[in-house]
Image (tube, rainbow over all chains, first blue to last red; front, side, top):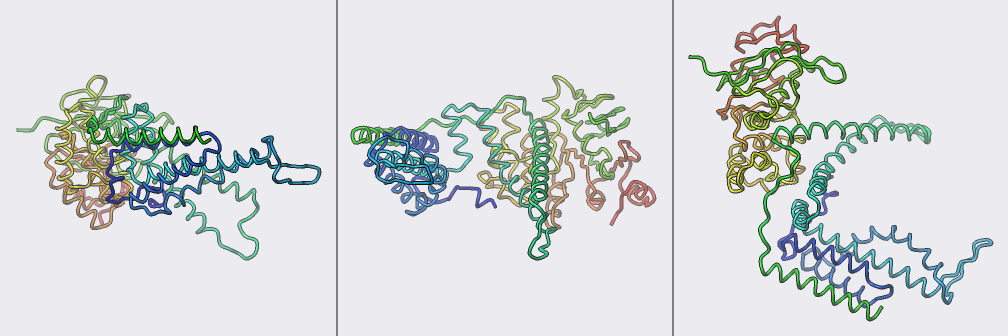
Length: 263
Length: 239
């Protein structure tokens, strides 16, 4: 279970060793630049994709790792499909569904594909970041980047208990399956009945989570928690790390300019 | 000469908001260096009593004093540094993203300087035989490892009293044996709540039986454990 949920892939690469603050800053900026690129800026899209894949290879994850994981975004990008039909221009494809006539235009198709590629590329930066950076390091980086401390603590607790929660859900599922004998063609009762069982399981998880939160809070109190959030100070970035940060930002700026010129 | 009482519970009663009366007029004095086991059936009030020892639950009736300090108001933070509380479920106790951060939590909140915190984390992890586990994430630890690290999170605060809720529950025989040996190596005053009467026999010279929120017996474990009628009357059994 932990392996499915934990995206971190330990390797001894330069990308893994890079300071998490630099990685988080560059990854977030990459996503912002990708999102802000104009539609149809194909050279920039390709260069960004090449950058992700190059970094993934440098991180010893292989060529396909980020490319495969980025596919998760595709179903969501389908929400942009209407763009292909709603943008005015020369029709390239006509669909007739009963009385409804839909014309896909060249400009529309380009818009749709741009959104598709942009979301695919953005997600790959996130995949690369989480595969090469421990979650605890990302939390420290978020603190360094002035994400509100309470929010960082909540991310941390969510991460810590996500695994436990998944484990509990799995235990409940096994308990249900153990009592769901297959009696031939029609088993498991009606949809309403199944929904009730599932609802009960979700409610059960909620109560368990709620009770656990109380006990965790007591454990925090027992060790002196007083509402203030205290953590170790982070060491300052080394000049070489600033150089990497500046280099990453410069490349992104260049890609943005290319995108604007060719878009 | 009798040593000074470290923990004094006098006439303590407690009722949960849902109306359940968890403790009734409990009196208990624990002196420095003592090892005391709290035993009794589920729901007897052991955990509730433990939560009073460092002010997690405020006393409604009666008093709790630790090293002479009332467990209330301004003294609570000091008391929490004196009384190290290890919860039954290590997943509740280990709430940080890494083992290091978890063990450092208590010392950080005591306001210690960072290098002292680091020293204490190292010492605490060494004391439970888990050196080098600092970078690990809690969800990849075994139950026994979690229990030992939960103990380390408290040892790092260098408390005078260790209070443990069911320390051997949920451990396999080997994990249990390791934990008992570990507890035996601790020099602090110790209070545990447990169903593990064999551990009580081996490790805790004094035993307090709680039932339905009341102290029904308090004396040398060797004597109480021989009293079959008493044990049976309160749902206990020496295997």
